[in-house]
Length: 302
Image (cartoon, rainbow, N blue to C red; front, side, top):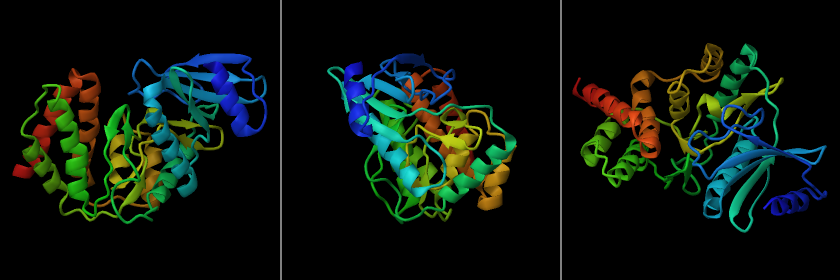
């Protein structure tokens, strides 16, 4: 397997590459690019080096090459369309039984408040990328290892209620986990977003703190699940699993202030990610989803 990776790096960079150092990395411990919290047991991450150049290698089963292709495409789009730093894609490929994604290795350091502020500004600037004019993406991709539908739509409330909320509820139903009538829940979420005017913005799609890091000079984002949607989905997720530092929000608000009613909409937006966690992990996330649903339905009643 490693021979295939060496060969792919050598071909892509035009310089022979031979691995002399290989270090396994795990979520929360790597000084490069942490593993996605939603990755399944078949995913592995390594730092590899030839004694000079360093790369970050993600491995998965051969059948999951499409996951890496979607991730690589999102990273390339972020690189092209925004000024936020993210890893460069070196190469992607398969061995006899594995798929692999090779990124440049980034050594992270402790985040400074000024860099959090700058990251907030840069995200706000990225959210002003609106070239497509519709909601969706060039293809379906993945949030964690769950397929994320991205069929183009001109209506945001319909897009989110059907391709985010109803989709996750259907996946749960197929596992005999029923949280209520899918059509009713989707309609409640649709109505909660109905009167919010949204410009389709380029979003990261999975922006929690584990998908950010910092060098001495700048913030870095990775593990994207990009699409064109309401910019608030990114801000909402930064608050779901422990808020980002206040400097981040100050930087964002200074550049592109949030619209009135965000605090209500973020509950709907974060329901999507909690449902996804319920699909992947079950347990406490199912109960959290039920609680969030009750609050959203209560908002409709009042």
